[in-house]
Amino acid sequence: MEKLSKNMKLNTLGASLIVALTVGTMSTTVIAAQTNLSTEVTSAKDNKVGLKQAITIATENASGMLIGVDYDEDDDDTENGVYEIEFSTASDSYEVIVDAITGAVVSTDTEQLDRGDISDYNVQSRAKVNVMSAIGIAEKDVGGMILDVEFEADRDYDGHPLYYKVDLLKGNEIVGINVDANTGETFANKYKS
Image (cartoon, rainbow, N blue to C red; front, side, top):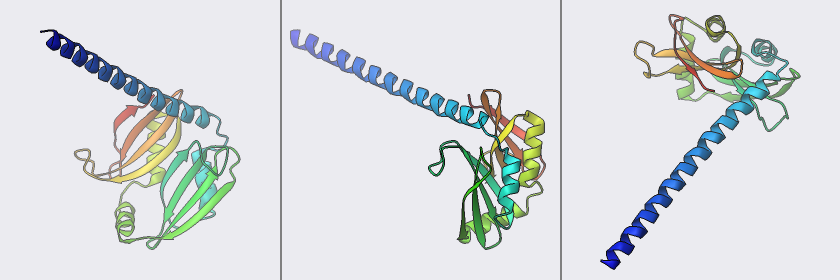
């Protein structure tokens, strides 16, 4: 009986330790996610160059159709946040990185498209709503400052196989909104703060 009691105490102690470690790990993960989000919000609020202005600057250094834009608040090449702006032609991809404070072009890169990229380009080029239109729709629907725009061709949402994922800074929150690439309809808004 004494041996059984010791085993139960050890099992209870072990289970308590596992629960404590799990809760601690989950708390750390939530805090890290909140810290990353607050860093992005703080950095984005400091921007002097808006996304549309960055696209205009990037257009002078690239060719083709605007594919998407990603805001990176902690780029290795600059102390400021940057816009990573991607363009494509039927054969090449161009990435132009624009400093979000100064508007300077930080770098440019050109790559030849592979078969999968060419297929993605062809799908996006047939969409009725382009990136700039999706930006306008998201701004009108949510307000705020656009940070990211990404084209998606998947079946995640019924009735919306082609859409743009758009992230906007509104106050102290980042709002995610989807814009259907054929109808311009918005759906599945998410607050990320």
